[in-house]
Length: 360
Ligand code: ATP
Image 1 (spheres, rainbow, N blue to C red):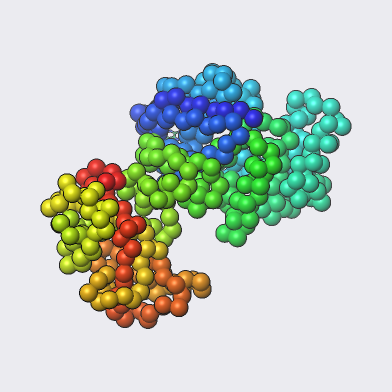
Image 2: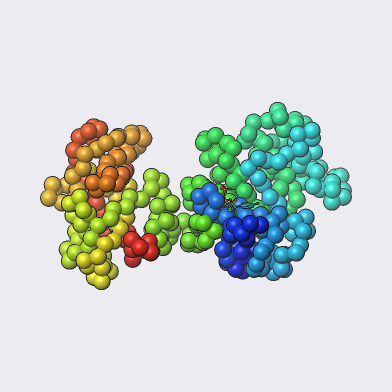
């Protein structure tokens, strides 16, 4: 178990491509931190620099207080789990898991104890004699996890380990990784592009975009107090709705004519934006159907998606066809094509500056 610190870490690839612009991050001992962001945001490169698989262009990386910039991967005391499992096809599950320990000349009885104990932890005791090709995706991923566990590393690094699994298995393995973390209490750094995975796994989450950190916070703060429009739109599914409009003394007006009055808290906060353009952000769950016609917004429902316990309603507002989605209780489900009155919980509204996209 060890802390991992990154100080202004930059990565510039040959040809000048800047993949990471000055990443500063303090991963505490025993923490499970998730790096999340869309494809190309620099999360894998960051992880690979921690692993030692990619050289650091500038900045410092410390593991357990020791600068490791020039330490080869094998001496960093880390274990990495990849998306493609990277198992040896010609070796059995047992030998795949024992491989690293044999290289380190660990005594045979100790190897046997570690392999069987990890196999039990992961529920793969009965598969030890099989070769990887005779395993399902989920089982292969467990073997890859087992191989990492037996090495008792100071830090686990995960690079999209569940991307190759089907949706159901992904959810199951996600819970297993969370359980594993609780049990082993080892520092874990986990990379994913999937915001749900990030939200459900991370003690803290680092949201990245174009090689820049956007926000580092715990899941609830990211969700409730995003620092900018990107984080607001990236975290949460379905995504937050954005409406461009103007603030006046009473409320927010979209050019389509939609008017939403502002609760006192927001009025005060937006005083200096009166007469100016702002972006209003509304989470899908902050709508509900009904209420007085002279309040809320009247919309024509374009698409209805029943999810069982709730329903997603898709509609447009502005003339430019800004598309929105509301998450409503299943019993309120209207028909596609019908016109409904939607109320908005404006106490939960978010506001962003249209130019800087920062939260107001
Ligand atoms: P993904 O989820 O698609 O793997 P990512 O967020 O992990 O994306 P990285 O793989 O870290 O992103 O890549 C960050 C940026 O660096 C991208 O623009 C990518 O094209 C670039 N990049 C990655 N590896 C190299 C390389 N070897 N040479 C040049 N550019 C690279």
